[in-house]
Amino acid sequence: MENKLFVYNTISRTKEAFEPINPPLVGMYVCGPTVYGDAHLGHARPAITFDLVFRYLQHLGYKVRYVRNITDVGHLENDADEGEDKIAKKARLEQLEPMEVVQYFTDRYHINMNQLNVLSPSIEPRASGHIIEQIEIVKKIIEKGYAYETNGSVYFDVVKYDSSHHYGKLSGRILEDLLSNTRALDGQDEKRNAADFALWKKAEPEHIMRWPSPWSDGFPGWHMECSAMSCKYLGEHFDIHGGGMDLLFPHHESEIAQSNIANDKEPCKYWLHNNMITINGQKMGKSLGNFITLNEFFAGSHSSLEKAFSPMTIRFFMLQTHYRSTLDFSNEALIASEKGLKRLMLAMEILDKLKPSEVSTTDISQLSNKCYEAMNDDFNSPQVLANLFDTVRFINGVNDNDETITADDLQKLKVIYTTFVIDLLGLRNETNTDQIEIIDSLMTMILNTRNLAKINRDFAVSDKIRADLNKIGIAVKDNKDGSTWSFGI
RNA sequence: GGUAUCGUGGCCGAGCGGCUAGGCACCGGUCUGCAAAACCGGCUACAGCGGUUCGAAUCCGCUCGAUACCUCCA
Image: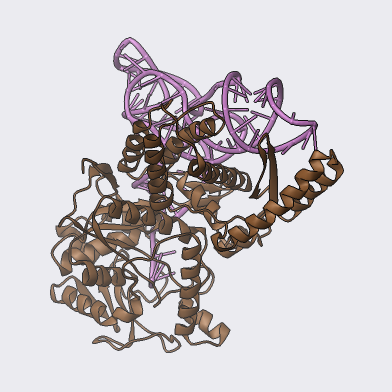
């Protein structure tokens, strides 16, 4: 295949040719959700971004092992409450076992991901299921002299590490700046330096989630789980590590440090980061009242939403923006996407029904190339969509007999649309295909009746039928040849 | 304050030195009993100020603004 994929590597700040370490195998690790609440837009973006990457790499013929973790241990409330495990807190409030909370929100996360047509990763490991692996890495780092124990907790010695490696090379930081910028901690400083981070944390008595270790009953430091699980399933040095840009520092930076000491090598070859999301230009936050979960989007049950937005609308909207750009949500923008998606899906339906002619009035071959070029340029999905929309105009033109297409080109066009819209962008028509045949028969009956009224010039009746159908969400359109219907307005 | 990512028309967003983005909205027109869809046409921007260049939205510098991270923890 002559396709040459280029990906933007955060660590080099440039687009690099993608060359797997062991082709055709590709290992990809992406930081998954912390399951202590319903998924929101901040979860949807990386999921959809790396779903696109996953789909495209497979399309190019690579055998991809995609690992996306579930974080289910040792989280703190980062807002008001101090020192309490996010999951443990929720468990206490709900009178549930911590693992019950984890299960509940993991299931709900999976449902949301299915709705967004995000493919399941190859492996979805849980941090709590890999405590032993994490402890082993901590031991290794201690043996190599880059970690120390204080009061049952183990910390990574960032200052020592930085003397031989560059701590901050991923996020563009310099250790001296980090140290000088760090605010003075009040009290119990177990760390030698402010920049040091925990590899193992001793659990306080009230902390429910805890595991035995050589140092204390406690839980692993945050960065440990990704190092342990990526190493276990993808090896010490794998191809792609992805995640949100908010994880750049300190999370991914620290993973690099751990890996360099534990395994004497970089964890991965390419670092890919998706950009963040804002709502009406503001960051999303519980305190700002614009914290909207995916379920609220799908149901339209949040005060700042004018209406419900379907999963495919959300997906389409995200794909209309490049993954490395910030993405701003607003009702107006979502409504625009909803209509755009509908136009695209309608064109695909029309495409299925087009009749071929002797000649084509446009050059189809360019479309495929343009779409591949866009995808190869760091997964430029908005450019792919723009290319497809250019052809929508042509498809409509054929339908209106203003343009013509040969049988051969028609077949090619169908393949291109199926490949890019359905397979790669992962968009799908949201009407239920099981029931659509019955509905279609019913609608034919209704429209025939309505047509009788029209022939009799009884427009009061014909308009009432159309208006009533409109109310239940069915649009009727009259053409020269008859009437057609569709879901929507 | 530091680091990172960005600042494009009414809105959302591609673009990476010269040439068209695309979607939505809006305004005309074709079609139509009416409407919608579809099609045709119109509107047409690059935060600001300097600089490089024959030529800059695109490169460089500064200013302003936005978002994320910079904390014990995930």
